[in-house]
Image 1 (cartoon, rainbow, N blue to C red):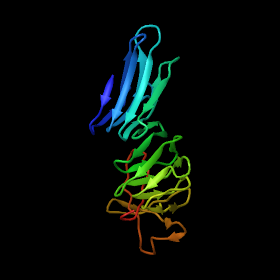
Image 2 (cartoon, one colour):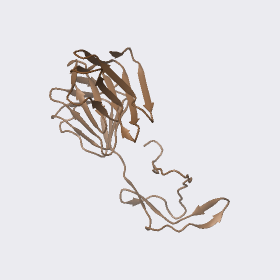
Image 3 (cartoon, rainbow, N blue to C red):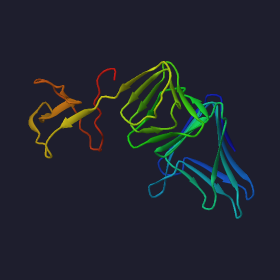
Image 4 (cartoon, one colour):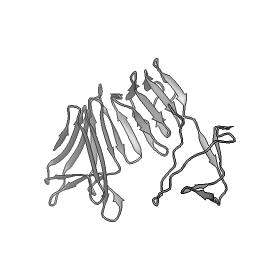
Amino acid sequence: YLNITDGADVVSNCPESTAVMFYARPGGEGILTVMGASLTANGWYPGGEARGIFFSRLGTGTAKFYLRLADNAVVRANKVAVLSGHTLQHQYNASSGGMYFNGDAGIVYGAVTLQEDLSIGKGETLTISNGASLTIPESVSLINEGAVTGADGSIVNNGTIYNSGALPEGITGSGSQSEIPTYSLNCPDKVELVNHENDFYQAQFDLSLDDNSILGEDGKVVVYGTYRKADMVLKNEGD
């Protein structure tokens, strides 16, 4: 049994092992309960396989495994694995449930009110299950670049939605919604760096916001090199 409650924010990142492991006795139960709190579990099994949370059993026989969510709980794991031949049952408080993310797929169970900003990235999904709802209160934001799906009216927005992905129809509430600006950096397939001065190289690019060029004749983007591969993030102040 593992109970996470009372506003706790638990983070477990394990680069060479499972982040959170449950072992139940034969005929017993393994229960993860998150109430009014959050759990983030990112683990990698030796060999590189993602495994944030793993439910298993000691000895032979069978066991039962449960995930229980209440009071706007949030569980995020890069992967949830369950011992072969077993299943993970999801239980929740319908009047104040929680969100559960297994890898890139998230599910809203029951009525959930965001307690802090929530980001759905590119390639990620958030499904508002049947009868569930997601409320964005004042001063809280939903930043969606993926796909949020659910029944019409399943989102109540009294805060702010920034969106460049898919949203359900019929969003209600008194909040605001705006599109996330789309930047594009146009450059040739092969970039030639020239004018090495003061440890800086220069290359010619065209940076656009939607269809509008924003750099101007004397504009520049400064990129600091690293030996590791990394994405370059461009944004306007305040966006």
